[in-house]
Image (cartoon, rainbow, N blue to C red; front, top):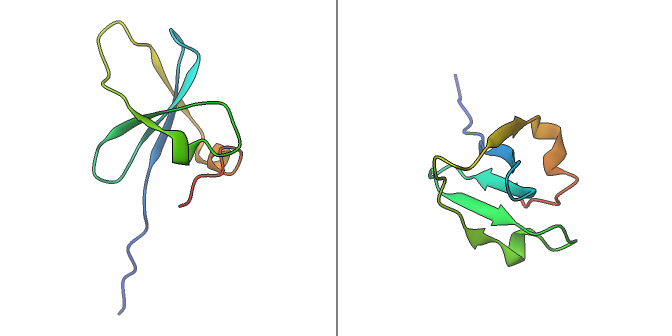
Length: 68
């Protein structure tokens, strides 16, 4: 049997800053701006206790035009 690895990410919205946040497969968090080339303009994001990350369904990754 052949197993395939799937690139898994988690999508969030930070309710305190109203920003999209992505956790990549390596566990790194990225803040994405609201624009067409969001992934190219991502910035490192460090979750803090005052951040309010709300999970978002995975089908929104197409809206953000993520490369995976």
